[in-house]
Image (cartoon, rainbow, N blue to C red; front, top):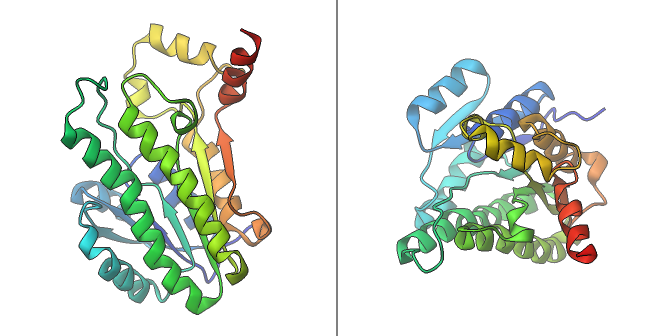
Length: 252
């Protein structure tokens, strides 16, 4: 059975929908968890829900502070074994209308921060001769999406970066993998018009949206000893939507 006793785990974007599920999963499996976010009130609620975790506010755009941040996290946890890069934003717009700032901000937070956090976390993991990095990407990093050239590029970039890191550190007992969610039920998707929801689910062979737990189950597996021979991979958690989309291109 998977357990994370004596494992120190950093989860970014911990106060969001998927982030909450990730914290819940790793706490239930015995991990020593520190979660980050940008909103104090949400982090306070998370701490109230899971009293044994640690929380830390951090702005992912402060790239010059990432190394110091990772050092402090490692000190606070007593080491760093597992990094879950879940933090991310979207600023959607059609490409001709997209402002430079919209492009740069999404790339900086989603892609550059993921690289820098991984880079400095690996330094800590090398000391332990053990490490697991799981990066949360998205189905649109594979398919693209209307009005999301910046978001799609950031998520696709994470996949390529993860493969390179996986190659570089495979012999050091450090694995780097991605989990790529499709449409996941959340506060955001709950506010989508019913007609749009029906369209989205019609594209999913399983006929339903996924849950945060579907994602956290996959992340927990890739973070575990049971996944020690898996690295550089992306696991899709989308009810078959990406597979179906690929097949439709072939058929039509």
